[in-house]
Length: 406
Image (cartoon, rainbow, N blue to C red; front, side):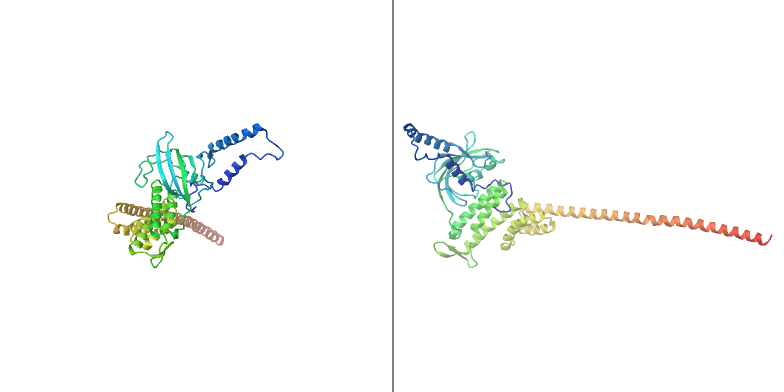
């Protein structure tokens, strides 16, 4: 999981559940009888029936996958093998999701889903890892692991299998794991295959973005880049699993570049939404390195710089974006906001400076006042001193005159 992924992510480590379940099943099997103990005829007759009932009861019990009642799984039909899918495996599934009143809100038949790539709701994604090939199960998914507080208000053409889902809805899925297979090496796939899968994951990222599930969107976009990034060497050649090196046309190279730029632009926005500013800058710089006049990338980078406190740098980028796409009202609006913000910051800074300057002047005046007072007092003392001195001299003079002239 990415470091950018928040701690509130719904995914949890389920890697040990398979072993735990096997241990529980093993402990439920009765220990074999001692060799010297011979069961009675009635015991021999009743034992197979009791074992069958125990097995049936065990299968009918709900598994509390997360241990808190938010994700429950109940086997309706045993699988034809003990094989279970692992992360990144491709599974073919058919499922129907119903609300508590029985309303069908989601339905798919023989859909191909990649495990752990959030191509279905998280609860169903987690439950699929605990199903055997060929198994049919009932999975009860709490809103937190389904469509949450938002629900689904307006299903779009991108999500034709999802219907309107009310907020905070618990969904019960009846799901069949039809088949499963490992993911083939990405490098062994053809250009067309990688392009198709990469764009499908990009659209899934867009789905999570619209729902403000930014961490899940980031996960989908990163997986898309694994298929769309670094597919072509500097010489315009791509490795193909069956036909060796295949030369790509200029149009194919340009088309692939456009797909990558879309993903990086959207990835930067998702990272910005979770305040992963440095990661967002790296993503948007991927775009500007190839397309320095990409208005959307310039706008996104401006938003990132503004979030980092660099308003002046943000204004410069948005001004460039506005000259490239003069009809984009969003860029114009954001640029106006930043200019007003810059003026307000400059005014506040000027007011603060004047306030600090005024306080400094007052402090200086207070510092100079005591010496002035001291000077006045000293002058008064000196005047009295001169006066007293003059009188004493006069008195002494009179006394000496009378002494000399008796």
